[in-house]
Picture 1: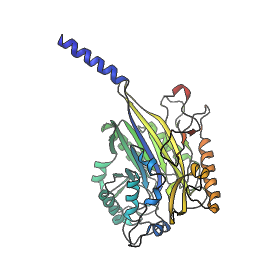
Picture 2 (picture 1 turned 90 degrees about the vertical axis):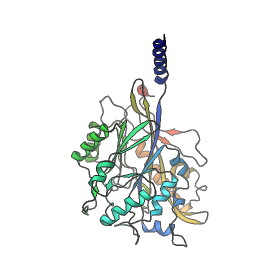
Picture 3 (picture 1 turned 180 degrees about the vertical axis):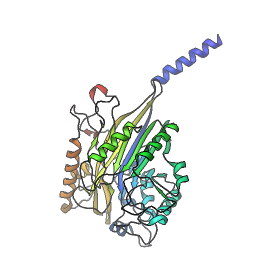
Picture 4 (picture 1 turned 135 degrees about the horizontal axis):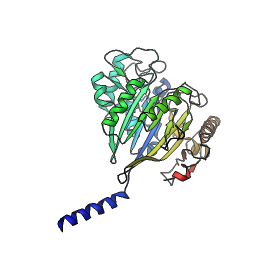
Length: 392
């Protein structure tokens, strides 16, 4: 009788577990830049730097994610601080981003060796001192092999994060330092390692494309397909400093759906003010894992467009990341001057039109998330959800 009771208990447990799911909400942001006008705005009377105001209007949204990831596009190489073309930013920039809610930073990008090997290694030490996990650049091969892919487990879901860049602006990477370049031999090895380390879901964070081009090119699209065909589950890109198109069906006709590829999220914050460069999107993705039957999938994907307001709020001049659609409707709340409204409206209109145009023939697309001024109200969306036949 005792064995029967045990068997019955196991069966009941399996039935209960079948209806349960583990979920993980991810958030991705584009290039965190550090131009000298940004540093001058953040400089305090005592010589310290305060970038916290930059995240004033979006930190609640960032912190709503279980895991938030941003590309740190500048070395933390120490003084003298500098902007383009060879960056070095105060550690306070990364610290403010961490306090705003970013949990992980990628460091493989075209500016990672702007200050040579010393700058690359100091960046790693600074991030470690701030307790910010990072990936993409390494002190040496041994550190790379131990830490890449970066394995992260949250809410019962085991993620593998991979990170690569197309180049380093022609600057040679000094030995023994390692920068992850886009190299299919290395990438295939990393994808196999992710599988061996028990990844439930594999995400590649990649620095690629042509600056200021608002549409992906053939090389990006071919690389995205290659990654998805060799074990990657989603591809999140940056570098062009503008928002590019995205897709939820990168390899049409295959059985897996959705397949999310974000080609470029634009700048998180920078001093760039040209059309399309003065903002970006954050991308929110929810994963779901079920044990019976075993499944792992993307259940929702949304984007939130934001604009960088370079101006004065409550008598403080700074660079403020503001939800663009809400700011268009309520510019007085964000204290946006009349002379800046046209740039805000242009960015918001261009970005949403570009991304709405990414809909598949059946109308499926990534949601637009409306971030409101007061808290996190019930989500309103523009655009469409997944294919109706596969809506979850």
